[in-house]
Length: 129
Image: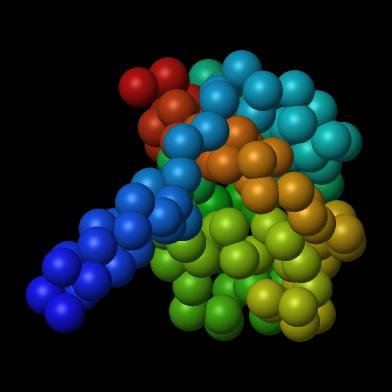
């Protein structure tokens, strides 16, 4: 019995968990091309149709100065950590009803891993870490 419990524990530990998922920043940069119509990232990034995404992971939703967020986004109480962003980017309108973001979402887990890896490279000033 102990052997089976140990085996099951080891098998569970080996399963990928969202926080452990590894993405490819270069592939994420290609996926980000879909986002560029509304968002910018990097040292020269500015707010556009959507807010700039520098330092996204770790910041509160609705907090980029100079961007006019929807009330839904500003009042969401969300702190953009990796798990929350992964959930959001799958279906933005579901995670934050009445957000201005009309993007239908990413459905492929590897694409989500890759876009997260890409976004995590940039600090609040748009510099790559």
